Amino acid sequence: MSIEKKLNGQTAIVTGSSSGIGRSVAWHLSQAGANVCINYHSSEEEALELKGNIEKQGGNAIVVQADVGDEKDVDKLFNKTIEAFGGLDILVCNAGIQKDDAFLDMSLDDWQLVMSTNLTGSFLCAQRAARIFKEQGDRGLSCSKGKLLFMSSVHEKIPWAGHVNYATAKGGMKMLMQSLAQELGSMGIRVNSLGPGAIKTPINEDAWKDDEKLNKMLELIPYGRIGETKDIGKAAVWLLSDDADYVHGTTLFVDGGMTTYPGFIGNG
Image (tube, rainbow, N blue to C red; front, top):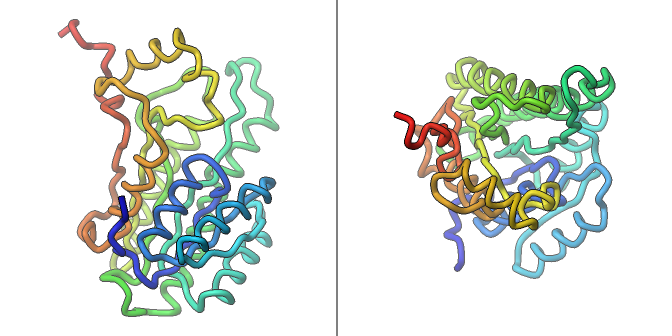
């Protein structure tokens, strides 16, 4: 099914977009008419493959390697995008990692690595994008002068034992997003988050390829299925389009109902 060109002519950076959710978001934005910068940290082959697929469908894409937790790399990422497409309209802060461990055993290195990528990286990229949006003014391509979209998680709301670094970073992302929505809205910059639930990606194959583990996971999802990356990609297109122009400062959960705390079913 083709996607309406809701983002025609706009330019988007999607961090961490060589695989998983980020890859789907970059693909769907391109299908909606956006020029896309595909950012990767180490998966160059996958990033180039996505670029080729976008171009085969008549879209425009570039590939830029950058560590979003490094300020110089972030500058490179944005500079190359501006050089290629002449401006910026959308930033999707998607890059994220997990380094799971019990709290009592978690190393400082694993805590700091997750914070650097998931939270500091979002801060650095969002700040750079907001400065560009302010400087370039209205490009006549959207109701807003720029759009920031953070890829959060149901775990900005649901605690997650054994993943304290990840859940803390996502909780911080919620406050980052809402604070920026307060501060940047008057500049015509729209700020929101997407909160995926359980999504079928390579990073969690062990949880959905095994029938027993999958059935256990489905107990947490009232809608009765695990999400697909396209569920997030299509939601991103809507949230970044002018159809959602009055949506500002909120997290749209795409989770099959996981945030309704289904453990309480039958216990009310």
